[in-house]
Length: 180
Image (cartoon, rainbow, N blue to C red; front, side, top):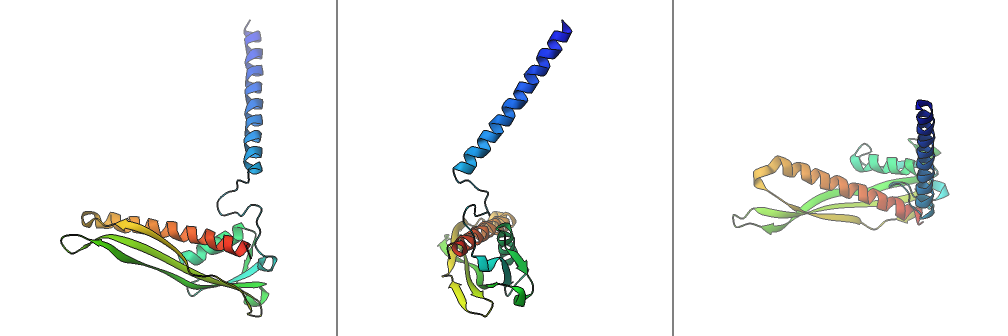
């Protein structure tokens, strides 16, 4: 009797495993069929062929925006080079700035709400220096409520908002370059 139970148990486990595999394959096929792709990868869109080897020019090459942009380019099949003469294209970060402006002031005269602003401009040129694409200012804004009682927490929240804006702008730059 226990041999029959063991055999039935093995059959049930095999069927569950097979069903799980079929279900996973179905989900993957469904997602790929609808155009889903991971954030950072363009999917069917491609960056221009001349960008296959790219030199990234930046006033702050190890800054957060330059690092994130380099990673996004690599995730989309671009080989980055530190030698400008070997590059098919030069991508220049012309502007990478952030700031804030006061939106509201409390009764005490201190700022209670800010608008955080992150602005980037990039330029794509060929090896000879001919400009192929010049972006308009790419800007993201977020409203930020300031609480004087939790200054350290507010600084961290502000950093998180800037990181979110920066990553959003990186994806926007990639999409704009792919549209060229």
